[in-house]
Length: 284
Length: 317
Image: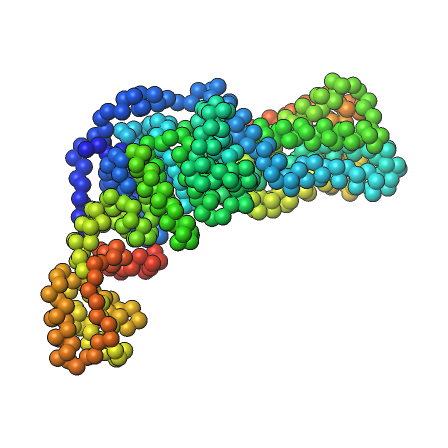
């Protein structure tokens, strides 16, 4: 009693489906670029509206940076920089960079959660641009990044940080940080697509991002480090970006570290964006 | 006769595993089609291909005449998918979830809101619409998930094990909802490992096992084909079970099955009953329970595949 097929398909690949021209005639053949952009913003809205229902997220990108800034300034500041205020002048740019890097984890854990919970399948079954779930997440996270930078800068100013350049320098610094974190987040997107599990993504973040940030000159001048670590720290892209932000916000040479930061960003994007998009397409 | 879903020789491999080994299906427009099989039979793989989430490695599939690979975007405009796990955003409210999908599929803000409210009301979620989904019960989540797949007014709806993990009450509610859908002319492809569910809902059933269709027909036809009746005999003494098995086997067209001390076997006609009684009487076997009833789909599956539905993958003969 096997393969007792009740229905026999006589026609080859084209099924018998007459009629319904009214409905079927209105089908679009592809997603236009404007629609894709609109879908990106709809999905970005979804990521941002989550904050309202999930206050823990607020901690991630509001309380955490404030806590870092206060702890570093008042606990380590005197010991490292002589006085909290002097240290703040050195460390605020570094803390902004550190916080932005850590926040890229949000992009990855968010995507991994969507994959794990099946929400991605829902999105992929809809007639929307294939890139929208990814671009929506990245746009929303850039908005969160911008907010965190503004928050850190505002608090820093209240605690005694002084801008040595001008508003354009500050805007350029913020822009540079956003460009660099966007580049780094491609690597995190790749990790999230491969791991597809928010916990694994978090482990990766701590194993890679944490040491990377702390072996830079984001929080401390490198002079007191052992020679081998100094050599690494100079090459560390986190140092390069921190130096660039210092140059743009406080004073000092900006051109060289800015160019180097942009080169790093370009290199990260060139390597990880294609890999991330490929991994994303395989999933999506 | 029009068919909303047609597949021909659908093949899908995952590494060494052959998940689908040439599936032919034809689903009539406006009907409920049940894809019935145990875990790992290939049901979800088939649905994921039809919902454009997976590409087949061989064969063709078309929805309302549109190929699922070459015209995936058109297919997505015609179909809705409710997966095995409720795929809604738990941190958003029910209303926000439905509105998001409306907005993504090109509805204006007010149209999306109206449609969301309308669906919440018809799935009895209007009171919970402004609460985060993570506060919902399992049954409420499934209903919201189903509502989400209806936002875009699909012509074809895939329900992948829509009641797995639900309590009996929520399951019955879900069944009522599915029955209501076909009244609106929606074609439903339902996968299930619950034989009762296919029996209750489906107009046509395909039984699938190890990636192949092993039988198709209406629930009634399947029962008729595999022995319309099931004879169950429970001897008073456990020691008599072998004697009962031997007696039952001589009248049936399949091997009897023993569960605890009850022996069941599919039989073709009612005249078997007195013959079995006589045989057991001659052998001096006292019988505690004897019944003849219409076969359940579970028994149909056993006859077709030689193993029961709850057996894990790979342990089949």
